[in-house]
Image: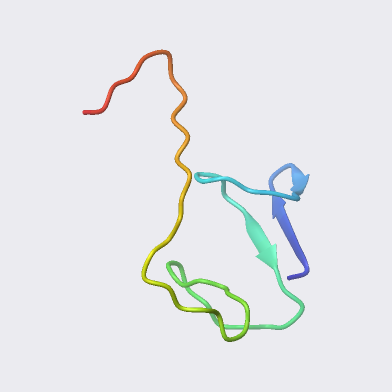
Length: 61
């Protein structure tokens, strides 16, 4: 990966709902919904996640 940018400039990290541009050293063909992973990634049945909910009160509709 060559770099990651948003409308304000270069970024070191990103979060959900942020629109980003990822630049690569090599030209590849990729579409929305596909992923970029390291070569020969490990396969797992489960994914560990951390969900952060920020609001004044708890509400789940």
